[in-house]
Amino acid sequence: MLGYKSLSEDNTIVTPSAKGVLERTLKAAIHSLYIEALKHKPDQGKAFELTTASRSMEKTPRAWQLCHNAIQSCLVKAIAPRLGEVTVNCTIPGTDSPLRPDGVVTDEAQKKIILVDITVPFENRTPAFREARARKLEK
Image (tube, rainbow, N blue to C red; front, side, top):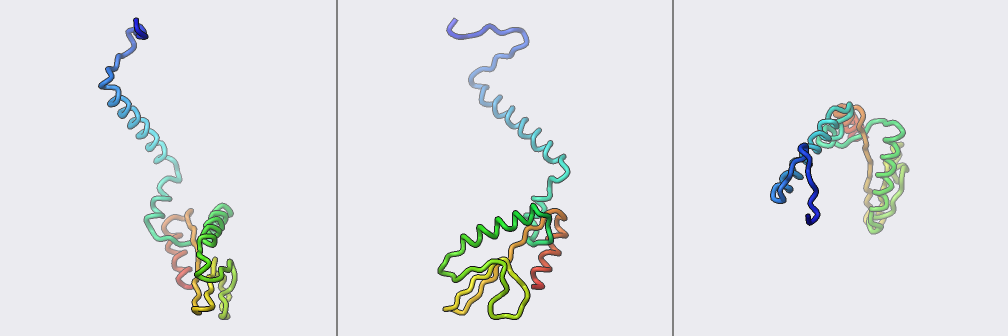
């Protein structure tokens, strides 16, 4: 019988032309269930809320510090050497300021200093971003 299997009463035959519609419908239903399950988890919404707000920092637990340090490392590697000498977690050269930005790019020839300060707040949502931004601006 050319590879056809006999079907019991519980089976439904799907024609080749309806196969695509059925696949898309099933995928959409599974996707919808997955999204609804995510929405009901307690921490959902923080990332969206925060990424659509400002990008600033507050004191964080160890995991956020590690995230901060990873971003810092990537940024330091990405800074083109032609921009100047890069120092990390050091005071600003030529000033009495005790502040230690995450990165300082010093170009002696052009007498320029670029300050890099990274912020990674998350847990306290939008208020943490506002407070962290205010602290960064104070610096």
